[in-house]
Image (tube, rainbow, N blue to C red; front, side, top):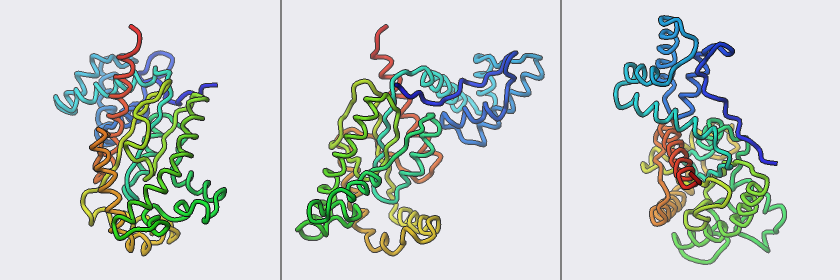
Length: 302
């Protein structure tokens, strides 16, 4: 049985369900708008309903108020995203979002936020797939999966950076077998899914899927210092479980893997999103989803 995404209809108000500033702001945030701007517009809509004595938001009037509150460009963009969000609610196909990127680029944070906004309850990682494979395949049989992605070079022969990438690619090929099985199951059951992980290397995955909307992108942090700061945050957040020293010692290898993944993304025409700001990165990923849904619906029957 197909599992629907849990996206609530636009909270425009009416006689049965009164307008709610909070619900409207939440819908606007889900489209990629900042929380501050979303609440500004939601409050203005509320005051306009009070002034005019009406109970439901008219989309044409909302467009006028969006321009008044946010300005011409931002207001028009906000309404365009809101209408695209409503189209997304009507989509019957499952969405498969593949979010790649090197270790420490914020994939799990972005994946969780995007899944919430899209109403998708299934979020998993390639690290989870790799951990499962470790339980079934011994170190002797499949050595590379028993290392971190940036340490997998220890499982193969080679020198320096070449060894790092050789090990990473060997591990990736093994993990993608499990990833493919997870995607196949999602398609079979009609699930939407967000899958994140370093192993989602562009060019090593299908470019499209039947019976689903496939969106793939890669997160990157260009500035090395900003990238390294993510590991300090992770160390604190995990109470030392994700050891800082391990990641800092392997930082050059992590950066080499990022350079490789980004290069493959550009060769494969897969979007690279700079994650120097979570709010902006989430908005960019949502924009990719909207654009792909629009394209798929445009290719459908008239």
